[in-house]
Structures are given as C-alpha cells and as structure tokens.
Amino acid sequence: MEKAMLLLDAAFQVDANPLPGAAEVAKAAEALGFAALWAPETAHNPFLALTIAAEHTQQLTIGTAVAIAFPRSPMVTAQIAWDLAGFSGGRFILGLGTQVKAHIERRFSSVWDSPVGRLRDYIGALSAIWHCWQTGGKLDYRGQYYQHTLMTPFFSPGPIAHPDIPIYIAGVNTGLAHLAGEVCDGFHAHPLTSARYLREVLRPQIAAGATAAGRDPSACAIAGSALVITGNDKTERERMRAMVRQQIAFYASTPTYRAVLSCHGWDAVGEELSRLAAQQRWAEMTGLIDDAMVATFAVEADPADLPAALKERYEGLLDRVALYIPFIPGERDDFWRHLTTSLNGR
Image 1 (cartoon, rainbow, N blue to C red):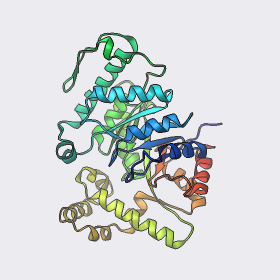
Image 2: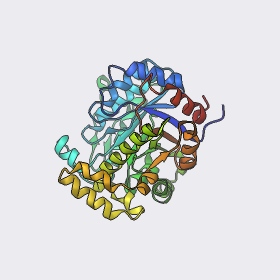
Image 3: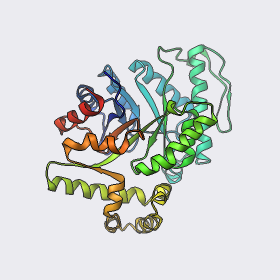
Image 4: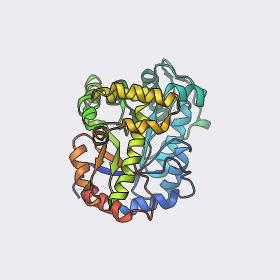
C-alpha cells in the first residue's frame, strides 16, 4: 500500500473517563483502519487508557495528545513512556504540552517559568535518562532547570527493543514550533489553527528550528485536530455548526491563542471574547464568531465529500489529522470507515 499523504487518526473523548471502554475503543479503531489513537490529559490521566489500548491492539499507534509536562519530573515521565514503549512494541508516541500559566501554577501547583526553555531542557533530560537505561551508561544530566545525576542498577528498568520513543510537543506560538523543529519528532497543532497560520507561521518556524539544528524539516511530523461541520441533513449540520462556533469562541477567548486571530486581523474579536469570558458571559460569545471565522477554522462538507475536503485544506500542511469529534465504537462507523478508507487506504 502506498503511504497516504494525510493520515487519519482517532481520539478518545475529552470529557469522559476512557478507562471503562478503552479496550473496545482501541480494538474498533484498529479494525476500522485508523492510523493512531490519541489520549488527552483533561479530566483523566492519558497513560492509563493507552496501556489498555496497547494490550488490545497489534498495529495501532498510540500516543498522548497531550500529557502535561511540567507537573511531572522528567524521571517520572521517562519511566511511564519507557514502559509503554516496551509494552506496545514500539507503538507509543509521547506527546507533551506546556499548558498555560494559570493551570500550571493554580491547578497543578507547579512552576511556570520560560516554558520554551524549560521544555527544551525537559526533552534533553528525557533523552539522557533513556540513553542511560538503554546503554547502562552513567546518568549525568545537568540542565538549566533539571538535573539527573543518580541511577543505580536497582532503579534502572534496563534496555528495551524499541528505545527511540518519538516525542511530539503541542503549541500555538512560534517558540514551541521552533523548538519542535530543533529537537522533536512531531508537533501537535492546536484545533484553533487555520491553514493560513500553518502555512505562514507554524511550518516556517518548524523548518527554521530544524535548519538551525542541522536537521531535515521533514523529520518533524505535524499533526492536527480539525474542526468539522458535516451531516446527512440540514438539522445535523446546523447542530454541528453551533458546536463549532462555541468551540471557536472558547479557544479564541484565551490570550495565548491570540496570534492565530492576529494572522487574520481578528485581534479586536479576541479582546472582546476575553472580556466576555472574564465576566462569564458565555452565551454572548458565540455571537461574535461570524461565518468567515467558521469557514476559516472548520472544514464543512457532506460526509461523502469530507475526505476530499480535508485533503484540499490540509494536504501538504499536516501529516496526520484527527477530527474534533470523539471516536465512539458503534456510532458513525460507516462515516469513519469511509474516511479511513479514503485517507489511509484501508
């Protein structure tokens, strides 16, 4: 089979505990031909569901999209990822995210300081720890933020068959995109990312980071989560359109994502959304998301035409895409099968 230009992935629901149905979701995702299954860290731990997914699949790639880095020591994350890589036979991707300052400090009671530099150091620490375990060499990592200088045989898990664990990082702004190009295997673009922002901002920054590090830019894959509007009738599509407006309004109210709006000249809309969000006037926010914004951030097409519409929007910009719709076995199976067959060739 010729490699698809745009791989279709699946994702666990972000608002439900994935553990009770993890085996069923993973087996169904593999049977339907998805390329990967991603687990987010929102209300639940992403690694637990992926352990179950690894046990019940043979070929499906599994990964975090994303696990929050800073509340965990690099040693803790290194151990979890090492065990999952070994258990899955090398099918695990470690996706890391920085989150935003308020959540790191107030939800996780952790340290927020120079997120790009700290994440670069974090990735360096992971690499050093994994190298130590694989080779049996001395652990002597001394970074700006993290230092790991003790590893005795009793605490080393030892080598595994697939030690080169891919690391993806998530981001919106240029610093993290540049970092991904420098040191990462992939980059998770945020759902509030337009094709123009990918083309004019993110991809050039990833390429610049790769060039600065003497790497081929193609070594860093780009994954995204696409907002879509589709359905078999007008009622279903209008329902999805309303949900997309709501989602855009929620994300666009966060100042961290303002650069995406600026790319399209929508700074004033972002500022007003932030003001309304601060006053908890949620119902008024969707009224600021006009049709032009919906068309910019969401792909709209009939179900039969959606694969072609996704290719038209993202081919050459993304390497893999998941829809911003949770994959639930037994729901929309024909819809998902059509997408995976069209995009993944399965």
